[in-house]
Image (cartoon, rainbow, N blue to C red; front, top):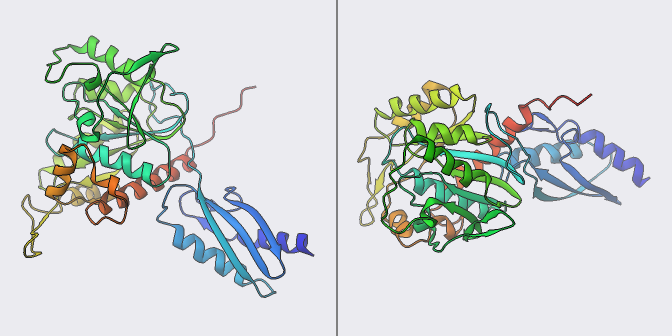
Length: 358
């Protein structure tokens, strides 16, 4: 009797579709540990990304499908996340052992807060329950160590550089290998070699996501690093001005050339809210990045306010996302992290499986 009912449950769940994978939850192997005890159905659902924005939709679909069975049911759902792996969309990127997905954080120019966004997204993804590493790829301006409060020199073990860690996130940066304030005056070949070592000579371990803070702009350094990485996708950080359209377009054009999908655009320094009156001021205009994303057909991942707490937290080596997802200042980063995880899962599901070796 129980086996027959489990079969009925399984058939009913084939009508529930995961928006990320665009497959039914049974075919996508998201349903685990189905059991039936009397009229109580228990099952676990493995989401494709942490804090998936589609969780409520999937739950409603499951409850509706099981509610249509010809016997009364009491449904007990539990949830987990299983991040899918992708070896990258670019042509030249090598795989990084143990790393499922590599996400580039880029900008069309400097000064838009890209590194602050990268650090906060990495910690947010870690706090959401995934394994995350952070690579500071900005050779000329390595700011990530200070933002995470990480100091020291990495050591070499088994011919691999051991990354340092901040807030549970393994971190690697040129800032660990040079003296504070030392200028790095290197030309193209030296930069390329250093970037290659930062990517492939580091013992990253098992990671769901490696977040990479790219150098700003679309010149040699960001291009070289992007070609070295097996990128799952890129996030472009911009500011609200109308000129942001030009910067976003340049960034998207670079990744299109590399055949790397753009996961979305984040509008940083979007607005300022007065702590005294609660009045909202759009100091740098508003909505330029969102309009650019809509015009260019890429997802918009949200607005990050111009908030002194974000700057103070970064200066003190404690990113605001370390406070947790319920903190109002940190919340926009968590919302963006959730959307990024969902978009990575969607792209991974859409990418064809490699052909078998005959």
